[in-house]
Length: 124
Image (cartoon, rainbow, N blue to C red; front, side):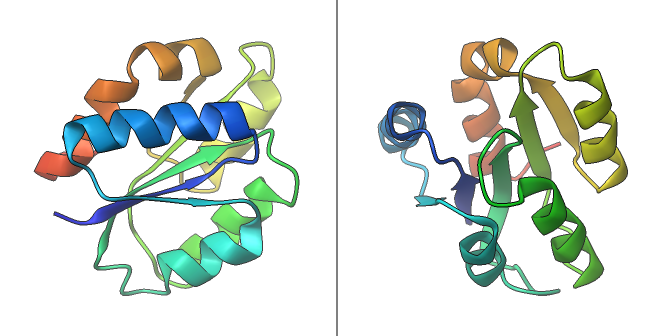
């Protein structure tokens, strides 16, 4: 089982993800910007990372980081979340290589199941 990396700059939301991961026994690392995401997720290897979570509304170029991650050869599943009204941004995230893009409310509702899938290796 690998770790889950999340690009989330909202401290309360980050804490919620971290607490859910802890409760499920999932290794979790939070990063605040795209540079840290790229460093933590690694290049083509990314072997120790089983899932990447991305708040598309995070400051610091979340969408651009996704493109760079995929360009490096990293194929770790990515689940992105955003406001339900941001349909254009959702399409851009899918084009950048996100396995799933969902509204923040759905992500929150299914957080435990998403993290559990990462724990068992069935992230997509």
